[in-house]
Image (cartoon, rainbow, N blue to C red; front, top):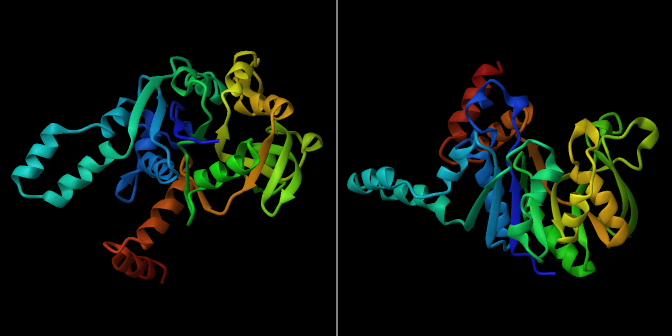
Length: 287
């Protein structure tokens, strides 16, 4: 199962990060010196992805502009001899073959994925949620692609979450295949306590076959009145093999303020251009 295409849904309203996201796409908020979505795109590229489709909406043209050339800025940098800055500006436009489509109505993650049908065609594809930055030695998407190729199956990225918060996620019914890889038997979105299968939840990464599109086209609105990708996955794992990969990574949910600040501080502490200053600053304000 060779995976060369990826879809990044980025059409959400960003209500957890208001008021900043009233006019700025949440995916464009900077984590140190790069917008959050660039980390997602880089993970896809480092996993062997060649074509990336970003699903946006009418308020998010800044994302498309960012992954394009900027002739005026580039000409100014070149004229000023700022070659390193010029290379940085151009790099984002050269990461992959970037494609964009608008989700004209906010009808849920499942509907957003359905917008990618013509882009994907008859190929397996990866899905990377734009809120979740993953830090790992082997990119999480590559971990899923490897599992999909080994088992000739769709795969979902999963980790254990506290049962006290499982109602905020989904819950997987699983059967162990090997260390950190499970057969996915069923999944339920935001379960009530009596409907929980396990404390394993899907967290932001998927490798799917195009069979998901036929399922999503027939999926009725579920939790929140939206077409839920989870409901589609519950059907997909009944007709095709699906594995859940307990991936190795530190996950940052940058769609909420706490996760965004965690990523910003921890990434800055690893950045040689600011880490010494930041450590001293934090020491001074912690005394």
